Length: 298
Length: 221
Ligand SMILES: NC(=O)c1ccc[n+]([C@@H]2O[C@H](COP(=O)([O-])OP(=O)(O)OC[C@H]3O[C@@H](n4cnc5c(N)ncnc54)[C@H](OP(=O)(O)O)[C@@H]3O)[C@@H](O)[C@H]2O)c1
Image (tube, rainbow over all chains, first blue to last red; front, side, top):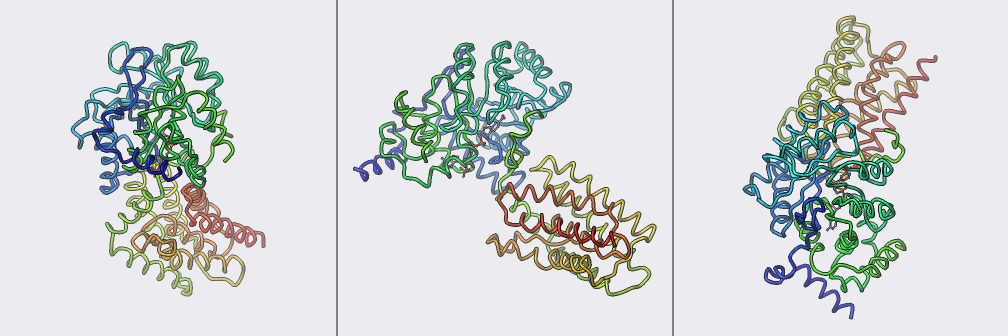
């Protein structure tokens, strides 16, 4: 039985192209426009900050190539992430500017006046004509930046506007902004152990028609390292999860309010594994409770 | 930042250990064989401690100022700042230290170095040994290979430790102002290494705290 499950799991990871076409990434609509996004994207904090190291830049470009090949669209970065934006720009150039890209960047400066110049610098690092999404990073000076971003959207210089936070910080303020400002996206931390957003933010996002990006799906890898010491539960196969990473991701993206989770990785095998978690079957509410309870116990 | 208590060291980390140590490897490759010269300069400086000529203090201060300038420009500013925007600001620490060394050590000739048989003297010598002899061995010992060796006068941490050691060997009261920049650098670099999970953190942090204790003890006498 266990062997059969292991073989099914391995087959799910290594399935050939034809079978893959049958399980294209699941997509969810951005509520404010109806545009659909695959439920798994790509983060770039730490993993893409490789400076001008040619070998590491090749690796990042390979991760991006595999990401787009698997049907990925959303790439998230920030001027706070060192050279990550440059490295993305380099990768996009090598891949011939993939038309599917959904570029999500941030403004991160305490001075409202410094926002436009920083955004322009970020745009030129990414080498894109304009960003799809601009978010106020960690709510830094949001009162000053949001009006600017909304004005840019009105002028067609960015398509969507959002805010970000992580690890449960400043949720009250996030809720206030979600309730009172016309934002398209909110980015928060959510995973099987960090579930505070289930109480208010995720329901509010559904009520207000705000798309949700999920950061730190693996707690920067620590969650995977923690659970990996234990055997993957045999019932993971029922939802097509062949690894802990896939089980964790399927838990996140099966929440109806979640639009896209953005795990970061520097490895091609991992980006493929993550993208494939966003295809096929997702857990129903009962199975979601089972996953959370199981991981809590580990 | 009202939510400051929710932050941990790893929230401020910007790069992976692999990226950081490859940066050192690529810098080593770019400046080779400069390493032989800087290590030689370091050993010669240590040798000068035994030589009580009137120009000794000026020469040692000048060599330190030159090596700090070189490391600040070639590594911190040109390489490290590419992956760590905070390094741009940290270069300021080097500028301050170089100016202080030039002013106190070279222009005024107020520093003269002598080995003494007390706790400060022993700690100073131990730091010199650590900086020149032990640091280059850490990378191979940690399994990262010789090409990622951290060498005095080439990368920051050993270059910063040496002056802490030397300044403990200054005759008279310890020159506190000259210790500020190296100690701040070691605090920031030590925190970064802790976040990276590098064993070197456990050398760098005590390596700079212990001597401060020794200097304080000497200053009180
Ligand atoms: N306030 C904010 O706006 C904010 C805050 C935090 C994060 N973010 C965004 O969210 C993104 C994701 O968060 P995060 O970077 O903190 O971490 P994460 O995605 O939770 O975890 C990344 C780590 O997980 C490992 N990993 C990825 N896929 C894996 C797999 N299939 N199997 C095993 N290990 C795997 C990666 O290592 P390998 O390289 O070895 O695969 C990497 O070290 C960030 O990159 C950033 O874009 C935004």
